[in-house]
Structures are given as structure tokens and as C-alpha cells.
Image (cartoon, rainbow, N blue to C red):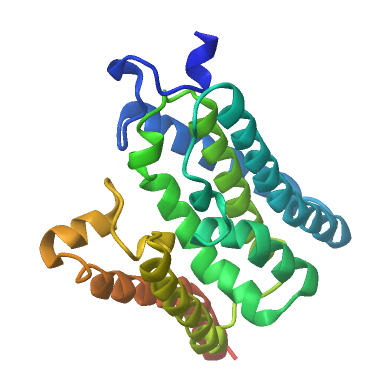
Length: 255
């Protein structure tokens, strides 16, 4: 039983399946922990809230770095894990965890904080709802790989929401063009690098199974799926600011 925490050598009945019961249980538990943590932190004084936020922002990359070394140990003593290239911080979630989130929170850079709110947060939630089954589908639902995935992504989502809920920063719709331009420039470089080095960072070379990208590819082919993916991404970013715009309009109307 202990061996199944780390290995792909398991019965098919125990494999982690997207949109299955255990998938939704993990999503529910992660969401419940985030809500409880937010409710607890919001009761504290502002200075303590900000200290906790900064501490969590430092913890996020530490968790990912520890995951990196655990992968190396499993490579050596159990079985090969995901390809080494996929562990580098070039996917959206790993980029956010290792670089963007700690840099945004500690520097209070407006563009980066809005990036965390409007791109990292929905990207993290989307990853938890549609995990990359080509990798996680090899393991049991209680494996280290799957459980750790929800721990680190849940922590990222907590920090992103806490940035706003704690009053640390206010999302600014005026930053939308800069946020989109920043991520667009990064995605363009990654797309070219994928072609040169035959990688799949940001899933821009081919879609992973079980994701919305795979659905788009079914209709539009490859690389046709990238166009609706970009459109969806822009739409999500804009929608993230709708509550902010409505609140501002309501406030102006009451003045």
C-alpha cells in the first residue's frame, strides 16, 4: 500500500481520474481549507494579515523547490517521474509560484499583483479543475504526486485571494493592457522556444488530455486551438475585473 503513494505500478481502478468522485473531493477539501484560512486571517489586525501574506508568498516557492528535490529522490530510488524539462518554472503555475507571486507580494509591483490576481489565480483554479491527466492519471488519487499538486496549487490560490481580501492591494482595471502585454510577450517567447526545443510549456505545442485545450483542439485542430484559448484567456482576465468595475460604478452612483 505504501508503494502506491509514489509509483505508477497500480491497479487501474485506483488511478486518479479527472472529474471523478475523488477529484471533486480533493477540489472541495482544497476550497474548504482556503475559505477557512481566509476567514481566520481576515479577523486579524492589518499588520498581522500582511505579515502572514508575505510569509505565505515566501512559502509558495519553497514548496515548489522542495517538490523539485522530492522528484529527484523518486527518480533515483523509485521510478522516473515527469520529464525534467516539465519541472522547470516555465509553465504558468510554476512560473507564478517560483517567480511572480513572491516578487509581486514582496515588491508590491502593481503590474505583477494584477498579474497574480487576473492570470495566476484563474490559471491555478483551472489547473485544479482540469489537471494534466497525461501525468497525474498515472497515479492513485491518494498518491504523493496528486495530493501535493492540490496542496501547492491551493496555497497559490490562497495567496492570490488573500492579496485582495486582506486589503494588501486593490485590483486595477487600468492595468489590464499591461498584464495582457506582459503575459502575451512571455507566451510568444515560450511558443518559439517550444518549437526550437520540442517542449510544451504553457501547453502551446499540443494540448493535454482532459483540459479545455483538448476540447478546442477537437474542433479547431493544432495549432488552431491556440486562437480560442487566447480569446478565452482575455475574456477571463476581463471578467476578473467586472466586480471591481461594478463596485466602482455603484460607489459613484451613490455619491
